[in-house]
Length: 268
Image (cartoon, rainbow, N blue to C red; front, top):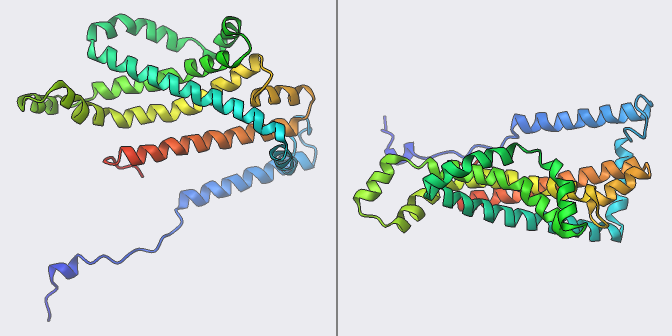
């Protein structure tokens, strides 16, 4: 009998791609929710002002997407979201680097950080409107306030999770502080930082919408308030779905960056 060589043993037959069962179950759950939603609306089990039918909501979505005023308001909300996210993320990462580098500073600031984190951020919206007026500034500050803490806390945890044995190894090789940070601390913290950024970006969108609820003449939050006042609930639901899709796309963008930058982790 011919012996099987090592090279023959290593030949791998590609497996056919099979739809994962969890994706199929998620799709079935979505179909079930839509059918139940349609039944509740069509048979007047729930009043249409409370829960318009899914087909009506989808029709309103296309109506909004065809309206020029929608895109001008969407642009305002996206600008507030991205500006708040960028400023909040930069500030949170820089502050985390400082407090981790100076342990006494972390001990001094930690009680205040805990108190500020415990404050319901939505309650700050009227204060920001009073301070900064009804323009973009109040909404951007609101987005910063909501998205700051996830990135800050994750960055601190990531920087503090550096393995002590690895740090001693770097020090035994007389590595500079710059090399220690760039080649050990930062790579260790990056997965934590991106986990915080994923949450922060969606929170920034929430902050912008909450700020617009408090008072604005432009933005998706203003449109939701307007349609709600006019009892056009189908358009309110349509805007909520559109916002959910935007939040999902923003999350997937950070997820894509995570896989590209933090390529050494098992991101599946």
